[in-house]
Image (cartoon, rainbow, N blue to C red; front, side):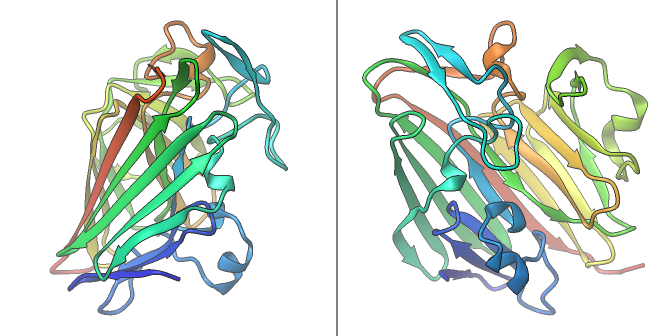
Length: 288
């Protein structure tokens, strides 16, 4: 398992499991900065039990069994256990560790499904800051629609608090697909630091400035996050679980079938799409 380290933190990579980050934690005391993956989680063989994985060439769910590109319809199949295609194809494949030193790594994936593309993840650690740059290059003969995202899982305790702004939220039906862009309800307005909601949330938020703060008093730190090249995030707060997700994404779920395809990019052969994500750990001087 490739390891990255800086003075404050230690990161474990799993190129063979979707190019995922398995664990990222403080070196002093071992507090998890991303959800901890124990031996059982690692043995499960899926990035969904790990700390973070890349979403390429789209984020979240797509309806109707595929989507239309200028050259025609692209058929998609849902992964096992899912009713709809979700999170692209990169998380189902082994990535190649192309370069690695004590504080940085380059992972690459050459994929033929469901589109020909090359994806890259560049990770680096410095002074408690994890920088991750995700990029995809379209290698098909005809133009195609692309999106990107990252799926970090954060620890959740009774004291966890979140600060993240947005202008609107995509409301969903029973199929968990967005059907209306609406003003933020008070319970989902995190412009000021507040506790996470008790009820389940699994929605895309629009009009994001890319900034986010995850406050962890019980674990002794704050994560200050910054995304570039994306204007949406997904907030996933499952009820009764010890994790939650704030996912930087370029587009809402099912954007391929929404008017105007919000956040998607039509890439011609050789064109690229990029998303950057930075998480900086700031230790707290006092704990509750």
